[in-house]
Image 1 (cartoon, rainbow, N blue to C red):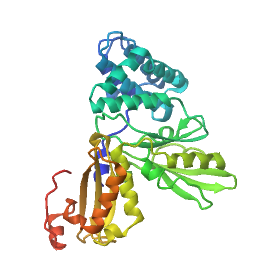
Image 2: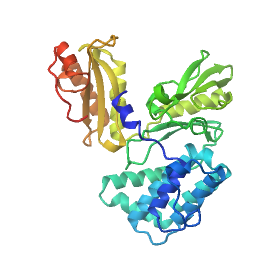
Image 3: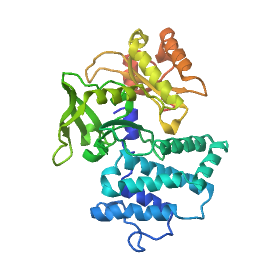
Image 4: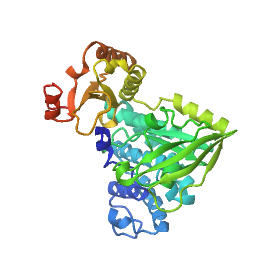
Length: 392
């Protein structure tokens, strides 16, 4: 399991009921949906009837947004929670849970977030000198501006979590079919894949040759609890998604046909859209693309690229990994995984990426990277002086 996998294994999107419970924790003295008793804990919530689940969120929402005695900080925090719920109603795990209440809840949240007290509070946060508050305000405003359930038969939405995350949630590439997010509807064991893996890799492109694509992986890794797969193929003027496969019980989704022209147009738009990225994530993409385009950069040092990414919790940092030696190896052959922490420090991501790749052409990257995988014994067998990592 990679470091990225380890960081995200225990972080997962909140369910609709968990959203309601979080709202209640922020408004502990208001009326509760069960007549005054505390909301059930997470162990009890799984036993609620579907109708009770659907009633819970609207009731708590009304109390949550109806309190007139809120400080600007309260409004800012609540706006972030409501923004996450609105996004999950449009493209995520809340969508299939609320049935016919979905449109009304989205409208209710958007009306609140665009009302004067809330927009004034967000504008103040954007200008008060706190970079995290400013990023959060921009994220809320951006999400509100593009509110609504995608109207296209096939739609791709990149969803960025709260810029002030509680853990290490991942950016998701959510596929919406006829207004319903397919991962949320068909797989509740993990989030949708990241955009770099699903969109920018070209995996969603349809050809006459059928190919199986993973849309989601379980929080704990696929080897533990599975994933969601679909086979994509081009058949004349249609693109077909069929032969669904997952670890979920029950019947898989039916085959779906899309107009190939609309499908290609939407996918091309998604592949060209990097507007959701923050600077460190852009840097990570450019470095990964550069190493992929020129394998000799690391290859001359007998190294192979691993992964390069950036997490919201480390907003100004990108992380790069690579393995030594390159090439296939048996289980008992020694290897070392190296990692670099790259601070963007307000610099232009394109210039920084170019400098970093140039430096790896000229200087053995093993000399400046930390050893983050493998063992002291493996390092010695490879003729390397073992160093304990300090930033991993």
